Image (cartoon, rainbow, N blue to C red; front, side, top):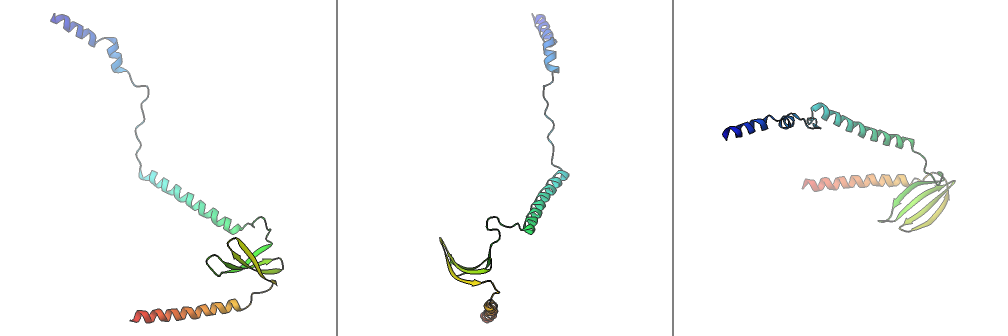
Length: 148
């Protein structure tokens, strides 16, 4: 009986099906995982820098071209403006050979004055001189405060 059992085991271990199953290869073997090397990291960083540089160059070119805005055909130009409140402004607008002083508020635009095109009065220059006086006064006050 023992001999029959050993013979059956020997026959089963050398059968063609068992040998075929042991020697068969899988249909797809995935490639080994690639590792990140310093060269590939450098390539990614340089590519990113190249894209960012391209964005900056295109922005600079568009700014230099300064295409005219469509619609008004450059008939209107804002010469100057000053805020007189949180949402209110007074704006000097040039239309052909005329300057308009316009008050602008939320949902409202009012013409305040009309005058022929000319040069700005010296009042703008005197305002900058007053700003310099204020700057000097503020600096003196801050120095006095820091001395204490």
